[in-house]
Length: 299
Image 1: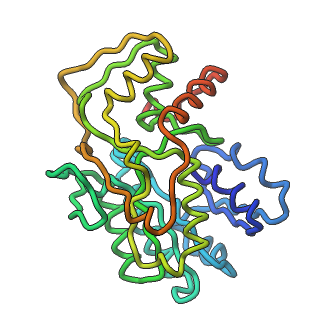
Image 2: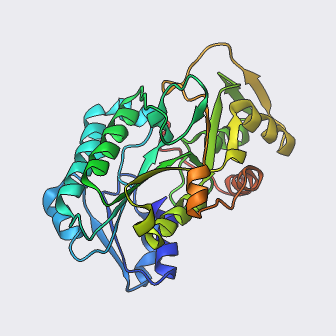
């Protein structure tokens, strides 16, 4: 998300200071060093000295730092806890709370299992994984502090300079293209999606409207992208031929099988712009052209 967000901020005449530990490398950042309003700090959100310097003189903080998703958090629970929650606590401690808002990227995984199948911002949270619990606690900590906008995003998809292949739609497209085979469990489970460029746009929107949006939680996405796993897989069958099999076993630890209501963010004035078909077609074109090493293959 960050590598897509940076050019939008620079184009809007912002000065941008990025803090990143470069866990996955920094090639996606290289084009931005040509801009004198771009600054880069190699560092960790958990390091107080680094972050104390990083927040000096800023007007707002966009909080993207996290170990994301069930597999990565399960692989290193301590890293997930100290980054997702303790890093958030430190960031909040170091900012000027009255004058520097935080816009935090949170997740629909916080809902966990939802009995009635429709999630609204006031739906009780029931996180079932380390990822969900750490993000839920981070949300509450910032809400208690105030001057914050919390975005609970749908699952991201789409091309990015720092491309992720562990995301459901991206994974389905990559696997079907590269292996000519896709095995899917819980095919009728519903998920909700958002294109990475719309995620980036939503941060710019929050910066422009923070006074009226602050101290609120918003689901960010579009009901048109509430889709089942089978919906995604069957659409791919219309674009290229591959072998598709539905399995009887396997489960999502987050138990995400729900639709999400996005009316609150629309009433605030933000609308997504990239639909499912356009986003998937973009992925197919891009992934056909490049040979990709999947950094999540051993997670």
